[in-house]
Length: 289
Ligand SMILES: C[S@@+](CC[C@H](N)C(=O)[O-])C[C@H]1O[C@@H](n2cnc3c(N)ncnc32)[C@H](O)[C@@H]1O
Image 1 (cartoon, rainbow, N blue to C red):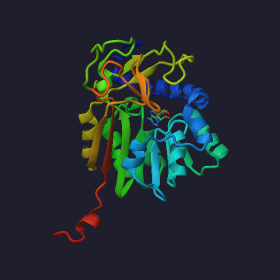
Image 2 (tube, rainbow, N blue to C red):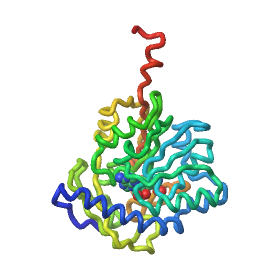
Image 3 (cartoon, protein in one colour):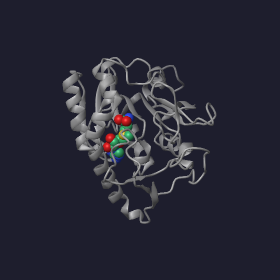
Image 4 (cartoon, rainbow, N blue to C red):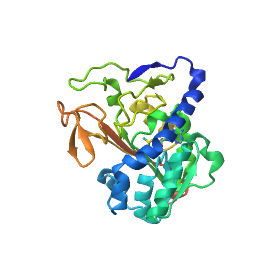
């Protein structure tokens, strides 16, 4: 349930603090409800083949996972051989991720840190920076985010994102049936406040106490933030399915993916992208200078 826009841009940090409290509240709920936890325990794969194919082999690569939540995807990449650092600003999410890593005996490092504070907290540069599924709406400054990604990539390193498509944000998601356009596609610095009276996105039986404050970003905002930080875009892809029931009445189309029942195959619901930090030393070999 949307309850209006936060009117004062100066309240951005208050909104962020409320989101942090929300994610601390949700961490134990998701630790119990996420199917990914059980899949990992059973030795199964929680990553989607779109991302594993697009990112390719990660063995012995260093991988920085931004907004890792309870670490399920981080641990899946670690099982594939990556040397993973997962970062999240929810202390309880990080505690759950560490518990799961210990239980499954998967080596991974987890860091309790706001993405925006990362350059002050973390010295390393990585082969891969990865972030996925429900991450952009929590960020209030995408230009700064792009700069932080570029900062933590080694020259030649790759950034990978899988995210819900901003197209989804345009429509009323409170009732099933025909799509009704009620929101703007374009970014507004004032976040929208949501009170999830209908229950959590993963565990509908749980109604969070804290509201969420969310920002929308267009495709151009995302690409602009990465290009502005000096990364080179290698691929962008749009998919006709999404990884959670964004609209009520969405129907499963394959394992852990959903489509709109009235428009199967017609709507852009997820996008992925891969961008690379230029490596000047590699480019000068055989080049003109
Ligand atoms: C939907 S979850 C991440 C998605 C993850 N793929 C999952 O489903 O487990 C969003 C995560 O972003 C984290 N987050 C939001 N804003 C953040 C920030 N500024 N810095 C670090 N983590 C942040 C939240 O704590 C939460 O764990």
